[in-house]
Image 1: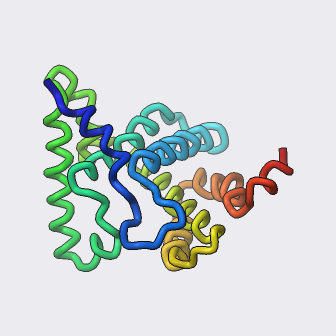
Image 2: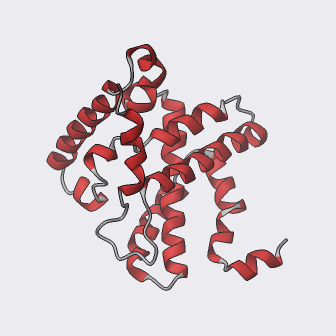
Length: 195
């Protein structure tokens, strides 16, 4: 018997941004879906607009599971995770143990199918970078949504993430920022007017 999917079902119980006041809370499961959708879009954009031949499904699969180890560790806030090099190094060890525990739950005959999804060191670096970009974009979108709702708690995070996105070398990220992100500053009536 494997407890894998019982654990994965608990992704919805892990709250993101735990130190921040949230107008609307966000859990790891819904975040992972959004990251998967954005990673998929980044690959499609990259292929259609910038001549790459990447596999959108591979990016999507990796994105779905990119935070799965947080089922075991919780979502450690960025200021804590990166407080200093020692904490960062120790947390990476904790993440590696949690990733291995997730893989250990997979029945032996499927381990190789899941290894690169659960163990970040086994993920293809190209797709890992795409998922990281999508993850950053989604964090930025969360900040925009909170700001739009009048919550200034996310201002510093928004500025930090915006700088990260502006310096991202992937042209698909800039395209996504230009094409899709502005709508996140609009309300539903404004979005519907555009249809």
